[in-house]
Length: 145
Image 1 (tube, helix red, strand yellow):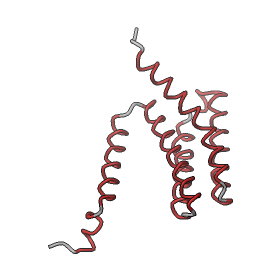
Image 2: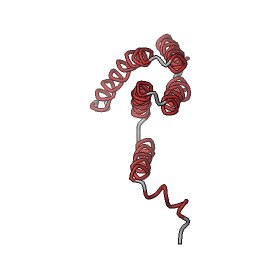
Image 3: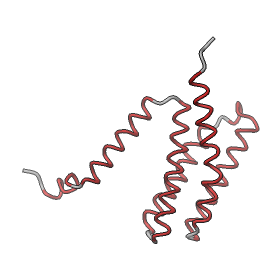
């Protein structure tokens, strides 16, 4: 009834896991507060860096490049784009500079195949992610006056 070339991807358990994950991400984005969206960007960035490191160590060039590219896009199109440089003042400018630096380090890591540069990016981003999560927990427990 169906062409086997069309149904073949549906027969793999990995396909179903990826589809389920994608639905979870889309649902999470649709229901998320702006604060939670930024947390999701941080989590996605750190996940991509970790996956890139694993691929790099294993010598898997394609997934390494894909994950580093994803991390760069999260920084450029997500975290940098979300900054309000006027309202955020010096803090927003410093975050922008840090994110740009992380993009450079990710690019060099990809070019040099250097996992130490991925580690550096993680060391820079993880404290921001953790602080952002802590702020969110404090904000969500406040009762409006």
